[in-house]
Image 1: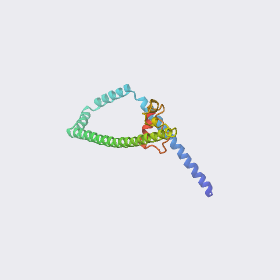
Image 2 (image 1 turned 45 degrees about the vertical axis):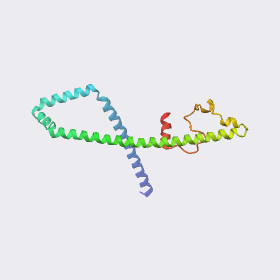
Image 3 (image 1 turned 135 degrees about the vertical axis):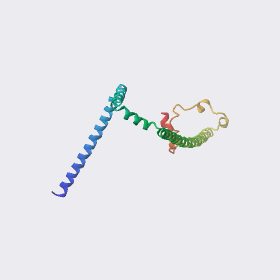
Length: 178
């Protein structure tokens, strides 16, 4: 057997293993789905009652001793302290998430304010530049008309004169609004 044949044999073996792995994953997923579908609430209650009846009929003394060990004050103290620990960890995570969200919102507000000031300055410059060549200086001093101040119907789209990419916060806001 030469080297090329060994390589092909190894490649076939690897392909076979990958195929079996994929089949195993599919079978596991199917079994998990069917297992969950099989456990309806009625079946859960019936299984609990049946196991309780069997346990109580078989060895009630032993069952009571086991329940007594689980219901000891130390066990209850452990469970209550673990519940407090989990609650404090969740609160800490929520606080960190809220803080980062507030920082992101502040950054987005700052960027928006800068962009709006820039857009207003560009609009003012463009309006002034359009009106001055016509020789009408009185129109430049007049307040803007309703058509100029009305929001654009496609206000979600970026202004055409913006050349830079939006910040991640603005991009996320833009996606969430759609």
